[in-house]
Length: 192
Image: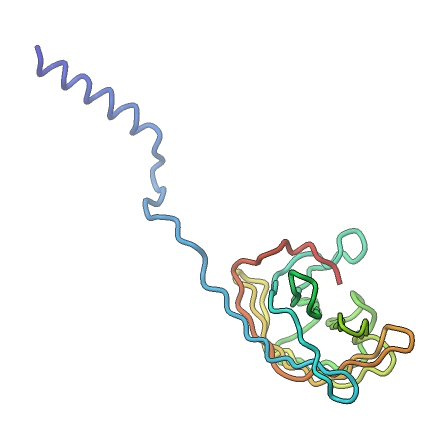
């Protein structure tokens, strides 16, 4: 009698828990995404060569440029300082308008109207500059990019961004930026 009661309990236990498993479902543990890497070799300077220290927190992601206003998928790069004491820069790309190894010249069309836009703000002086402004010149070379996952970009910039501030100074940008991003510290809902 004891054996049959034990067998009955075993059968009930197995039937209760085997019904919740789906066939084909992976039994491997859920692993975190790949490792984020970013190399910000871009150097920002004011006219005269004064270096602009940029924030070290970054987001590199893909989403709509600005929903309801510019409804295009964009690859967005944003370097900022969470304390808002250091300066920041942004670059947005429209992947559907660019081929890899493209060399784009400045000035660019207005943000959202062309394949790339780049802007920088110097918190210390209040100077702001953008690639579509008068006085902008130079190039942005996009070696590779992908909205992934992961989101990837390899860009070289050698440009002067024209001032957006009345009486302000232009900002020079030179160097290379690369990133492979699986996750970001903020939502990709930020605008240009």
